[in-house]
Length: 138
Image (cartoon, rainbow, N blue to C red):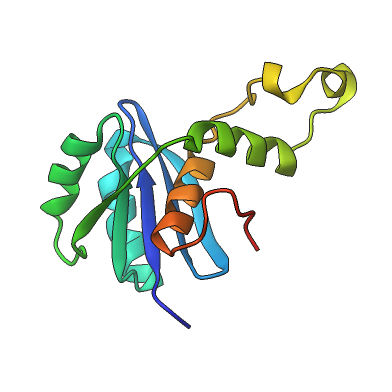
């Protein structure tokens, strides 16, 4: 079965979360920062999380301090976020291809119509599990 990792892409207003094991993402979400501690606690318990990783970008230090006070939380590891935003955007459009006239525009000129921080968290999850940053999920 392997280890279960919970990855958090921190931000000032919202965070992306993804939990999974090698080869499978069990859950993903984009949540307001205020809901993250409760959700992390629930997911650690519900999924049997053995590792917690957090991106080292904006809001990381404050969120690490907050999560570090929660009971039952595994030690927090910091993972690099280099180039995750662009890769997450590509993955979003892979899973949700533009329709209508938008399909005629180059994807590099488009911004997803919804938050995609959960895709960034999925990339952090893969990095924590040792998968290459360019490798597509299984």
